[in-house]
Image 1 (cartoon, rainbow, N blue to C red):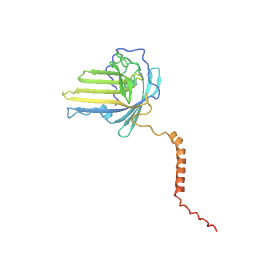
Image 2 (image 1 turned 90 degrees about the horizontal axis):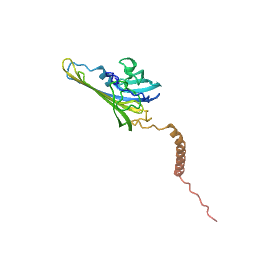
Image 3 (image 1 turned 45 degrees about the horizontal axis):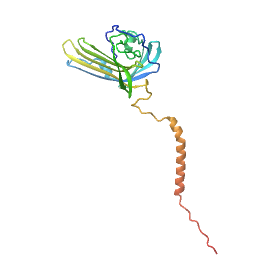
Length: 249
């Protein structure tokens, strides 16, 4: 489960000057880390945690942008080798609803250029600060938001978005809850960006491959040089014939 947190939605503050910062074919790839434990020996692990643990990677690709409506494809690769694709469309400036595409779209992409104090999709998630933080080897201007809910325990949400594009870079979900018997359980789900084409075409984890053009460029001269060298060595290695001198009479 890609946790983007649908949390108690109430309008707070929204800027009409914000805009969509993504375009078709923009994409990000993520890894998901999840842990869960409970004091109750009979408790079962939540489905969201199981799904997160079984996810090898997830890719979010922008399919099209029309005004403030963004359509994305979510590709999930599971550790058993299977893959799942889903397509969602949402207005990234509108309030997040509790069902349909909006809930699945979540906070994966938000308007670009939000500033401190502005709400995200008219929810209780508010930009706490704009900071400079390194992601994938580059310092990016990042919008950070954190929210703590105290309902039968403690639930924390944290988000980091690229301010220029509005794409999610990192999210944290941490929850401490108590069941009806008073047992405590703790859940941690972290989503981290691992690759993107937003500001680089090559992932730092994947060194550039040798270009076919470079072989076409340097291949023929190398072949010719090799032939010349082999011919020279063959000539040098041939046994020398002795020349017979004629005696003068």
